[in-house]
Length: 122
Image (cartoon, rainbow, N blue to C red):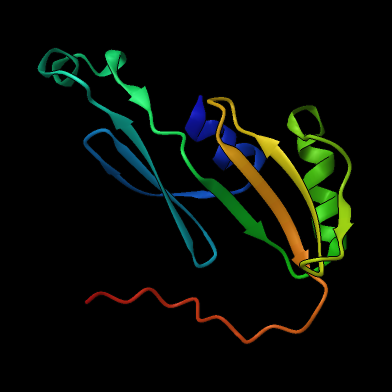
C-alpha cells in the first residue's frame, strides 16, 4: 500500500489520519496523501476515490552516502543511479512511488542555512 511504501521503504512515520488523508512525517517534513473525491457517491465509497499525484516530494539528506543508501533501497523504482547536478550543486536521483508521484532524493553539495525542525501553528 501507499502508506507501507513510505513507512517501510523510506522510513517515514505515521503522523495523523484524517478523512481521505494520511499524514506522514520524516524529520521536519510532513506529507499529506489526499484522496480526491469527484462525486457524492465516491465520498461514501472510499475505494472509489483517486490519489492526488501532482507535484514532487523531495527528501534531503546530509550526505551523498545517504542518497546512495536510499538508491539501493529504491533501485527498482528509480530513474537511474544518483548523479551530480552541477546547475543546482546537488547529488540526486528521481523515483516514482506506487501511485506515480514524482520523488527526488538529494544531498546539497554546498553549505546551507540551518532549518528548524520545530513545527509551529499560526
